[in-house]
Each structure stands twice: as C-alpha cells, then as structure tokens.
Image (cartoon, rainbow, N blue to C red; front, side, top):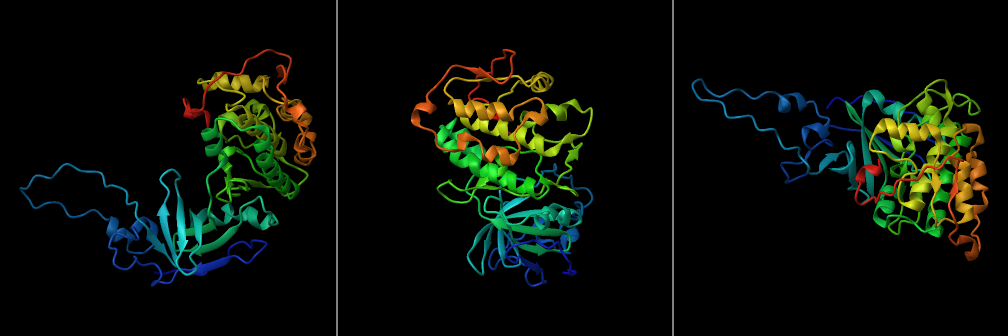
Length: 361
C-alpha cells in the first residue's frame, strides 16, 4: 500500500499518536476471510474488488441483480479492530489490540480531515470536551480515534422522558462549561443539540462535547459574525431564520443551550410543529410558555436564554454564574404557575417523546 507521510495539525495537550499504515498493517484478521472489507481497508486492491464481474456466457440468461448486503463485520486498521455502528454513519467502535483500549473511530476523506480536526489545535484541553486519542492516516482516508462513549444526552432524555432539576443541573453545568471553554478560545460550536454531548462513564454522570468537527474557529475571538444557516430545525435561533444579516455565532449557541435545557427539564422542544414553515414561524416570534412544575430559578434561566433578541441572552460565562446552578433550597423547587418567556400566549404542544421520535434530531 502506498502511504505517504503527512503533517497533520498540532493538537494541544497529551501527545496524539499519528501512525502511517504499513502494507502489513492493513490486512484481514487471521482466520476470518470476511474481515477488512474493501471500503474500510483503504487498500489499492479496492478497484479490482469492486470492479464489475464478467457477464454470464452467451446464451445463458442473466439472473436478476441482487443488491449486495453491506458488510457489518470487523475490519483492521493498523493495530485497531473497527466495527461499524449502524446508527452513526462513518463512526465505528474500535479496539486497540496492542493495549486493549476501547475507543470510537470517525473516518474522514483525506481531503477534509485536517479541516475537521482544525479546532483541536485552537482549543486547549478541557475535561468536558472529548480529545483526540490517535490518528491513523491511510491513502484515501484518515481514522481519528476518541475515547469510548457511553450514550448521549439525547438517549438519556428520551429514555427518562424528562429529568428532575437536580439531575439536569449536574449534567447541564458540564454542558455549559464545555461551551464556555470553546467561546473563550474563539470556537463557535453551531448546530448544538443533545446528541452532541456524550457520557464518558458507565454511570452517565460525566458529560463531554462529542467532537469539534462541525464548529467554527474564529480568526478574532471577539468577532463572531456568521452567516452559516445549517442546523437542526428545533434548535435553530430566530436570527438565523431571518437571514437578513450576519448573526452572532456565540449568541446562537446560547439559544440552542436554552432549547437543550428546556427539553431536558420538560421532555419536549419549546417550539414544535410537524409543518416546517409553521415551526419556523413560531421560532421567529420567540414565544413559548414555561410549563408548571419548574422552579423559579429554572424559569429565570430559560427566560434568559430563550430571548428573541440575541443581545439580551446570557453569555456562556454569565450562564455559569446563574443562581440556578447553586443548589437552591427544596422550597424553591416547588411547582409554580406558568410564566411566559414573552407576553404573547402560545401553549407548547404536549407530545411524548416515545410517541414522536422526530422530536429529537
């Protein structure tokens, strides 16, 4: 296999292993003929394997074409065994056969991989942001390894339907710390949502930002004007939908954090409608009700994040200083009447997450 040495971006913190695939490393596991399928082996024989087989002899009718079944077995990349995760395209569980470490591997085309890991060179290590553990470069693909995950916030909220405030407080504080760290060092996350935060332990008590692949590195940390409009519809901020002018990337992240916290506490999105146009209209108006059962502190925090005007939202550092994070007395956690984020009266649709999986993206 012809693998050329490359110079990836420097990643701060503990030294990240960068390996070149030798021909001997890119081989099927012994005694398992189906291992290392062509699409993962990154081997030059790929064209021959995937080439069109010769047709049947003349006079013999061709059998109907049957689509090939994608191979789901393990593959070897250097010292790693990879197993595709069916629910996550391009993501694999990984085992380092030299050390026994269980990891997660994301596969990128060589043409984009350096851009995908660029933010790691701009961001100092943080315990609530997943770090790159290893990088293996093939001829056409780069294999980026991170620590094993134990589910994500999306799955937790969906399974529990909603979290009590103490549980949500412990987890959301870690989310806020990760975002504040990124903003402090000029990294805007964009497309923030529950799925982006994973658990680092089996007890699901330690939260990390899954990766920095889709974030934006600012040339000047104090200037965050952006025009990118991609993202999950339920989390998008009103100013992004307006499309009239550049918006503050950091403040758009803060709106998304408000949607995340609301969903953790209530079990549904603050804005929802099966019709995208109607959904976007509701978000543009920025009007939703805070339901019964939330403490005054939680309502105050949500009120400070889900503001239509970006300049009126809390910054990430201000979010961490909010009184809700200071374990209030039990009496303050008592349910109270509804309090609206804005003056208009618009009820939040009551939809159970188990009945409508489209609530979560």
